[in-house]
Image (cartoon, rainbow, N blue to C red; front, side, top):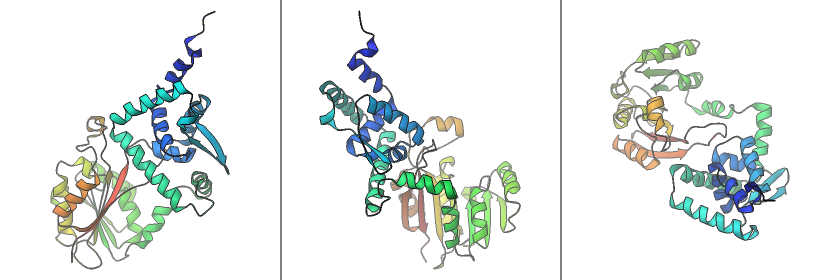
Length: 322
């Protein structure tokens, strides 16, 4: 009696490796032993999805696994693989590495962050089970208390410009902690939406205007925020120049904060969401800030939420010199 193709070991292995997500997981797990939550952070998917794929890989003989406390740790160990599987994986892995993409590069970048975070925390009991601790803390307090709490560090005497305010999300968070927020957007429809959201904040002024010619006086604000805006504008350099113009050059002000997407390859965003630029790499952002007259530039990748599907984000900050 002839066997079905699924019962042939090599065919089963090929079937397991046919999923691009599993290939991404195997690629990072050959480099490091990781917990489920750590893999989820790297591939930017929910832990439930990641757990399902890890089980498939482990049941198929691709992964070694062990327990540490409440966590299960996974690793690709070449010497533990059957000879045919080892040869197949090496061939596939080398082919993947030769065709590097922004997505694969981002996986390795996030892997570095995960390993560094673990190393920083290695002296405590949370070193390898951070994802479980985060879940427990979130069940008690939610996910969104840290950032709003840190806003209390802002100077209460500041006037802040929210350039490209959209529906008012940044202005809403800033308003309780500063003297006033000047929320600027070129879209009247967006400003109408913002007005409905921000009506309870008396210290927010909504202003209709072009970001390449901001209707604010020179040196009139202490800080400016440009959140998820630059990728929509034709000339980001002109927007940064306008931000530099309106910022005060006092020792206590002149701060610009930018939040935007890291460079990515999702070209469909141009069509579906009107994006002009497919994100920015940190070197480009730093160069643009310097050319606009800023100093003390810093660019940091923001932590990635596992339940989001968009590209990674960065935050950049810079100052106008005194």
